[in-house]
Length: 273
Image (tube, rainbow, N blue to C red; front, side, top):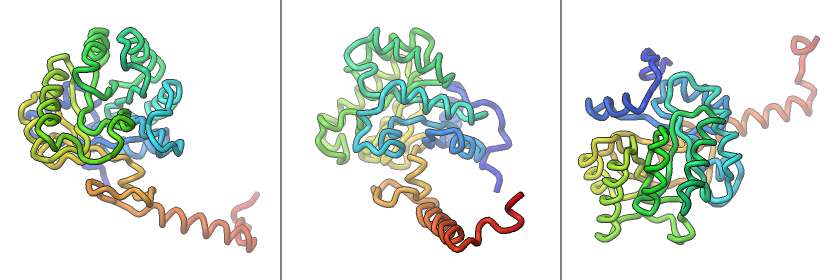
């Protein structure tokens, strides 16, 4: 089956994402953390590939995103970029690489861009990190913002529940969204917030707003690829739609391989030299 827009082979850029928002075309975004998956996701016609710090969870088995290092994010980003031709590749700046120190944040951003050859970076936070955002953008590096549930701040929240349900937090989120746009961010991710609030933010901003658990009135959607392919069995939030059951498919295939090895069915005469 051909990709949805695979006939359009032009490289996706920040400018093209704004054009997509302006004409009402939804933006598709998925994570990838390695070369093989990146090739598949890009070849299917994905607009944006996020090298998420969620690699800490799905690739390394950590409980939170906090442990993943700058070096590890660069490794994943380099692997993904090698497998991508069309999609825009956005890389998460990991926890500790930009909070509280603008010059350290700029140095981290430059390292990611120079060593991975990615297209852009993503950072969690609003007013608290706006100085670092401006400094990175002034160096010519595109930045995507991230508001709502911010996994790097999970120890502060103490829960993965929906954010910005009360008026004060909702007002701060709207204010932060405008600050990020004014600082020069080319896009914004809103995670796990009320759909009505997310829709309002998307309408108020001129930059594309991508949602994850933020309803359908935003400009695009992002999911973790292992989640939407059903490779992870235990993670079942309301916002996740499973497009395959690869956990069952892969388990069955591996079980048949084990059986064929044990019974000497594999390899057969055609499968040897």
